[in-house]
Image 1 (cartoon, rainbow, N blue to C red):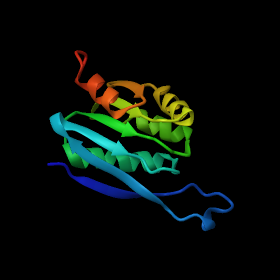
Image 2 (cartoon, rainbow, N blue to C red):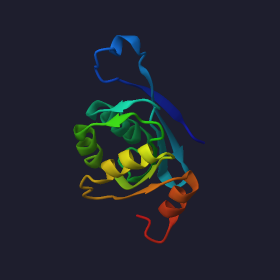
Image 3 (tube, helix red, strand yellow):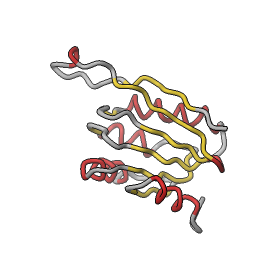
Length: 141
C-alpha cells in the first residue's frame, strides 16, 4: 500500500511574487522495498526550506531505515546553492535517482548531483523505469 502526502512549498520572493500563487507541495509515495518516490512541484524554486520539507517527508515514510529515493524534478524552475547543499546532506538515503524530461531538468539535476554525497550514490535519468532499474541493479545499496 502506498501513501502520499503533499507539503506546501514556499515560492522565492521576487518583485512580482504577490501575483503568483503558492506552488503545490512535494508529494512522497512509498514504493516496494523501502524506496520512496518524491515529486517536486512544477514551477517551484527549490530552496533549503523545500529540501528540508523533502527530508521530513522521507523520514516520516521510512523512519530510521535507509531508503532509495526516486526524485522527479520535471518542470522545477530553479535550484539554489543552499538547496543543493541541504539536498546532499539528507541522511538516511542509500541512493538518489533523479528523473527529469527536458534539457533544463537535466541541467538542474546535474547541478544537484554536483554536490558531495557522503553516503549515497546518485544518478540522473530520463525515465522512471530506468531509475527504478538502476536502484534495483547489482550495485543497489
